[in-house]
Image (cartoon, rainbow, N blue to C red; front, side):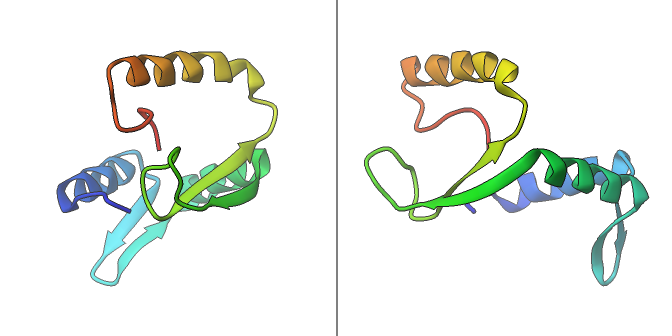
Length: 95
C-alpha cells in the first residue's frame, strides 16, 4: 500500500484512542464502536473497481469505490484534488 510503519502505527493508535479497535498480542480487533462504524461504511459504499496502471494512476494497484448519497461532498473533494494538481502533487490528498 505504500504506507510506512510510522504512519501505520499512528493510525492504529488513533483508532485505539477513539475506541474503534482493541489491541492484543494477537493483533487488532474491532470493538462495538468499530463494528458500528464498519456497518455504516458498508451501507454507503458499493461497487469496488480495480483500475489497471495507466498514465492517470500512481501505482500498479489502484482501487476506487462508489459512495452512495454523498454527491454534495464531491465539490469539496474536487477543490482539494484541483489544488493538489496545481501544486504538482503526485496524487490527490486522500486515500
